[in-house]
Length: 314
Image (cartoon, rainbow, N blue to C red; front, side):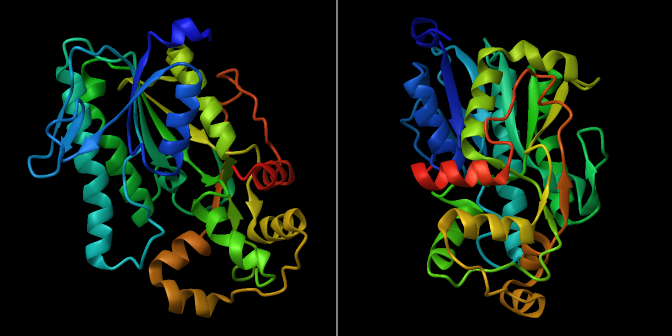
């Protein structure tokens, strides 16, 4: 896309201060897009979410080409108490519902609504699942299902909507990889449990490039939209890898040994249900739609991804 064309396009991002949101904001701004952040509890902001009224206010003088909903606290921060699980659910569903409702009522709706979800939608599996697979039946699947359902107001008025089912997004600046950089650099890293659990992942630069492609050419999603006006897209590398493979790859990339495994009983003691689901859980998810969208991953292998991310501190 030429810079002059991009300058005419305004993009609204919720969760703009998070790992993906902040990187995407910078990436799009460099390409010439005008990026707006959905602020929280700031009535003076052009785009604001009121947590008290659970409503989103939009500046209708700005024509939005795309809205990207990435808001929601990390599911990996803290034990999953009953209260925490409810907070994780409500924070995602309430904001997404409010945003979708505001977009549906806008005099000029955006050409595209991209709303975050996760591969947890499918539940646990050791066999590769693609976008056609049904929802699972555990907590993460319930969370993702209700999160996706909250986009209904936008879909019902015909706004092209895509649910972005993220795998583990790898970046040295945060998330799983960010948390592992220090212990692995200090030679105290190792596999989690027996290391056999599969992990579905994607490098952050591929996420940024893919989302940019969707914003630039929203029509590519049309062929993958269901009867309810929604398209699901798994943002994952071509093949899941086991935790043992990831551990060895990270050790190679950092030139460090990986001889300090964290056994299952200790993980369960330290992290409870969250540790069971996120650290020991089996997530084998692939995408049959990335290629159909015309996007080829720049970092399809874990070694390529880690080498780039560590060298460039990305």
